[in-house]
Length: 387
Image (cartoon, rainbow, N blue to C red; front, side, top):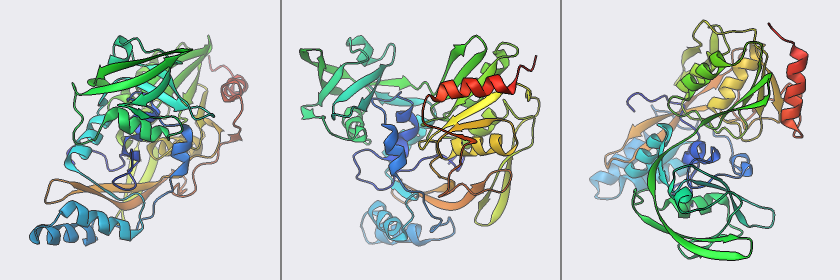
């Protein structure tokens, strides 16, 4: 996969699901046509390393199917299913292209994020400025009742997003989708055209004059450099809250670049590919005296866990929140004869101290799920003013 890092996470679990985890990085960010409830990330299971790039089961099955005039993709899916590896997966050519575009910070959608309330209603939580949803007058707090005539109350948010996006192989910019909406007692329908939009995977805010919050929803292309610039431009003496809650991963190269905003060179992680040990290092030159707190939860996955583990092991950050997801396996792509792609598990990564993340996750230094930002502010005040 030209120019791609093998850690693009998380993976779809099986083809045919209403919406697969391959797009979680974008959806959790709220930058696609919908967003995961945090519980979606917690419900998936960590994968094993049943398959490797040198295990030809999947590619051989695809080749035999092609020779017999059958679908290589379906044969590969059966082989992946039998493997028991929940992180290896098979994508159609169109799905994989959309996945790559999402990691490049692009997607096709209408530009709204949504969550499911306790009573099952689907509520709009964010409308991307300039998007089709914004132009149509949809606002945060509006209720989404239906998509193309299908009621959405009680559906998992992943299914709602699947309806909004349309089929991965067919939905394109300009295609129409009809939404049923409600604001107070007023109900109305509105037809929107999907558009090519850019994600907002990094956002910056101020908790106080002395605390800058950097939220990374996904490690899409360019996110690491944006974090480095933000830290460099933060007021002298200001502490940083690095919010990785709900970050389901992305490009590990971007996570390593983000680590370089806080670590003055040195080891970020090690990983193996079919037994071949490799290492990832931060660039030198970071300000290592600025107080730093990293926020995590059960939706913090993969590349986000890699970053968290590096900051924690090297004593650079106090980690606050709840145990992370535990996704520490490495996938590599293999192109099949019909253009589809099999992503097969080839190894696992470890934190600088040698801790394995897969299936275990990372336990915060301060475990809490209440008033997390206030706890972070308190921790920062205890770390002192470096100026």
